[in-house]
Length: 248
Image 1 (cartoon, helix red, strand yellow):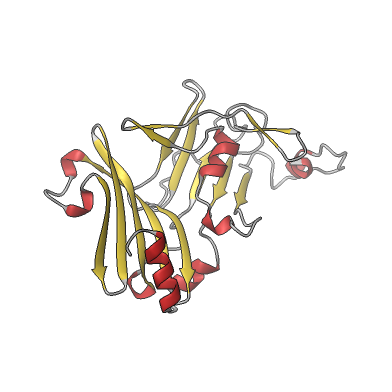
Image 2: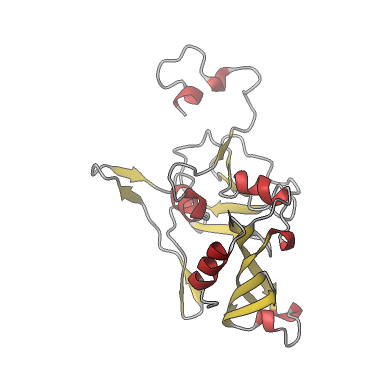
């Protein structure tokens, strides 16, 4: 941001260049800063951009507490929710993914691996398949094939049923596109908005913030990829995964 704004006395800041002026400034972020980064979903970016904590289900309602700042190890406060005010109005949007990793190249190349992947699920009640075991409320486990296990979580939220599918399967069963797991976060205070009416592909999750209500509006499509890891296809990892998620 300092280079873009020219706040360090840079003679020709990025925002002054002729090919930049008047165009959206979009930042692409991938959280590969720690050894556990591959286990992340979008909760931390929600905290940074929208100032909302991890979702908690209470009485059939999803609640997310607002977080104004966090304290670093040195004791210094760091502001959260930078898209809830105009402090970073130069940024039009953030493109974010935790699955744009080497694992995506592996699964799209059909290399033999074990895959643990979680996808968001949502459906309107009027469209629910009649008596489908995969949409029953609560937590349930299924073995769909010799190397394909599925853990479902479902909650009733009025007119919709929502939850997740967690798959443990051989890569021969796994399908994934380039855009699976991609998030866009739009800054409502952006000086130059980023294509608000563009028809994004179905895999992409769109994240907005409404200044009038001070609430996020996060549009995650059914089957949106939340997380994915790949493992060597051997007995040790299969047993470890099945044990970890209650299949054994």
